[in-house]
Length: 284
Image (cartoon, rainbow, N blue to C red; front, side, top):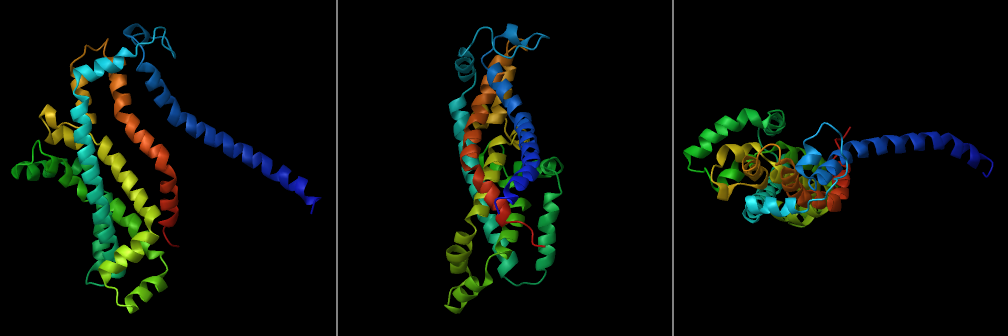
């Protein structure tokens, strides 16, 4: 046994080094732009308006952040983004749970075609539905309202698809035992299915939160009142309030303020995404 250990180490070491190099390259591709953006948020116009690559600021300007906060009402924008993100993501998760449960544990005519329709929604880019959604929401008086921001994004197929795959892998004996004990669909859902599927539900929640927080296209279309703008939409106010040459540092500061909360949430809870995708993998 001791004699075979060195040969095993020799065989595995090149693969491990290669894997680490690939992982390091992937991390650098993601981290380097974010790092440069963070450094640029402390730079002055002379460091940015140049053809030379200046990584670190010659003169650090933390006042870029205070200037960005003065020119744009970030407090109001944070509130709007928080409301839209919490309510929108919460409703998305709830609808995904209910729909996925129905597609797995309920029998009704045309269930297969309903699932195909859910898959079809994942293949349609949001740009295609922007105009019909605008006509519908504006016709109902939803411009410059929270519900107008939230409602069109609720029909997403990703959460339903992922949770359906996760629910299909649950031990059916547990669900059947609850049914024999007299538990209806509602109790089976919230006392059996949901507790056993928390990693997948957390994945859907995190993806929904990131999408709602970063969404730019729909708020750009439906919101014209600065008091109702979300953070990504509010960055255009910051860009419009500054001249092109001197606005880069302030714009980077505003962008960091927008991205930092969601990056922190993602960094803290990212392991749930891995667990969720593992639990919700498609059966062979």
